[in-house]
Image (cartoon, rainbow, N blue to C red; front, side, top):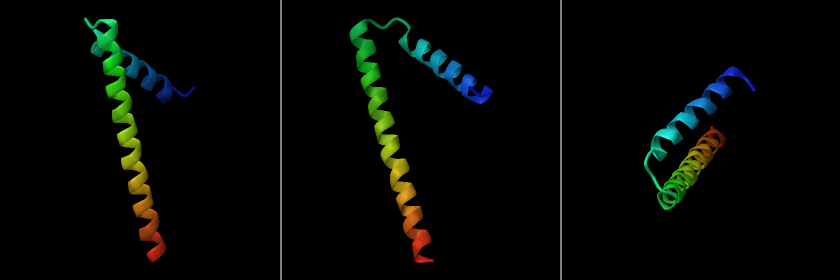
Length: 60
């Protein structure tokens, strides 16, 4: 694993630990669901931008 990847994993873990402070299991599950939904939404937005770029490049 490259250094940047290791740093990203450590950063993500520290963010998760901060977000999880004081939460019970049910709250952790709700937080995980929220973060998963955010991830899905971001993936959709990224895909839409890639598709728009491809269409724009095909028109040239």
